[in-house]
Length: 611
Image 1: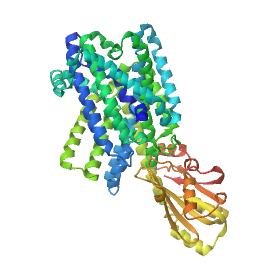
Image 2: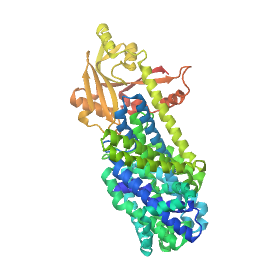
Image 3: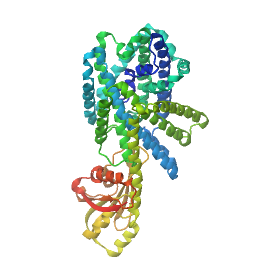
Image 4: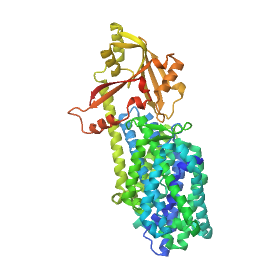
């Protein structure tokens, strides 16, 4: 629970730095009376957005749609694809929905660190206007430090950041409670009719209001994406008993302050603190916003890991950072990509107010996709009462569409950026999936069936040499190209031949006693299927250890791994979209390194495949 507070809730936990301020400014309120009216209306909308979108939708409903403890859009996609696998149209629709949700999450992963850190550092303006020229440089330094420590893993980071975030949330609650105590009438904003009535009388700026209120719930989807890091119950308890109450108290405290002093609108969060506490609060805010970025960054690592396992993107180097939680991973290329994107956003937009215009589209789009996939899984696969839950999911989806639609109006003010990032990621994913399917079909063209090959071995009786050869094969019914090339050029076969196929299944983890499926063929050939969950890291030597313990008593020194290293080339008539697929295929991590095969036991045999 402490680790979850340190990693998962940073994003939504730092929203009080800017959400209420930006939302009230969106109403156009100027004098004290207008600001007071706006405070009650906006607070009501923020409070009920937190209740409905985060508490009811994510914490109580969608987080029940876990894939053996793992969450996130790809976990949902894997669950739904089990039902749609036999229907090509539905399968592709599910795949595109999952890819789009993941792509939008990547867009969010770039904006959240930028706006969170900038909003905290801008508190220096309250301390002294002379510090304004240094805000950008301090923000960039904090961001660089954040991404530099990512390689140590969320387990260690959570243990360090957890106590800091507990202090942060206690500080939020204390600062807010003191002002709520002085003006308890602010609690009238808990009435949902207050927000609806405010919208009714301010219909002209309703779109701008909704587009800003969503800033208070950003980070809700990270709770679900990070579920595999810490588990459902720690995240749920942390939200219900610590984070949610602290956020409400702080938002209402800011509202009480603004009613008594409308001039505090320039920065209501920092104005909550007495002057003697301003510097400690600034330091704590710096730390909290750096931690806030952990929620989406660690979620991005999880999403990337699942995307690799499910075949949505090329193989990447994935480092597991915890011996206890297999869901805790670090992906260096994603870390570099996000760092460059976040730094570019800070330099390009310069202020959190400007970045707020770019925020929202990616978050609300990802939330809408989560709702659709979760509704299908819960009602049509898990068997929840459709008469009760279809209307509930329908209402939740309408709320998502309302937030998404209002944020689309900010498209030309900066909202285009996360959309462009998401579109690029989606294009690459769809291109990779389509190109991969074409590659698998091309492998079948001119391929030799394994049954026919074994008949040839029986008739030609090639020379057999001592040892065990393990061929990594994409399919167990065809003879691998590496085997054919080795026999053609070296004129020999090993005494024992194992055809090893690694299969990723639609569950996060596979038990060791269910990992291997062994079929003994003729002529001392053996087909071995190694099953991995989509959250697991394939490790061939561990599979070999299981083989030794269960079936084959061979020495590790006598093993040779044969890995096909095919080069994909384009035909003259190939469609244009295959060019990026071929580039990604050539740039991806090699099979020897990805499968953790010792280099001194690996033999890579090349070949050409035309697409």
